[in-house]
Length: 220
Image (cartoon, rainbow, N blue to C red; front, side, top):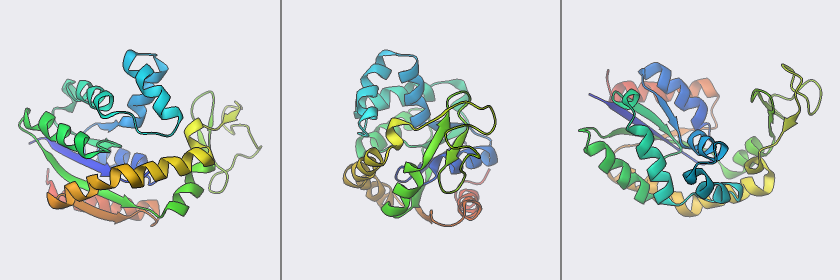
């Protein structure tokens, strides 16, 4: 049976890292809505043009645009065994659309991991993040600074900060999350699918908790 896991939590909660680890452990693809948005924006697709204005302002992309991107991706053959979804759904409408998409395939969401992190921790994590222009190597002012400020240790390319990682945009992203996506938590709680994880633990401890619960709820 196909296994679908949703990783839920605010920007900076560590969904990407945990999703990749869960994907490897489960043997199913990792589907990141953020990566999907950036792909469409980077290729200037029609959906990407629609999404860009919202992403640059730290706002949620409208449901219809997001759902269309995800539905198109999930229709690909590699997603038949399941997926770890990172950053989707982020509204109740998206959650219901995902339920409908999977039901048509005889599948369903098996578990939702809600990674919990305090807002002040999120701002500290996100606003110090820098990315190299050449190959996307990531640095952080506090946890992983480059040897030479503004320069990638690996390839020497300049480091830049994504628009949505600037402090003022980070604060808005978190507030948008709190205001608009918190109802998704209640939606999945009522379905008995929600599993809360303390995202302020060390990364490996978060992973251990997540993988243990996946094995319990969705045995291979």
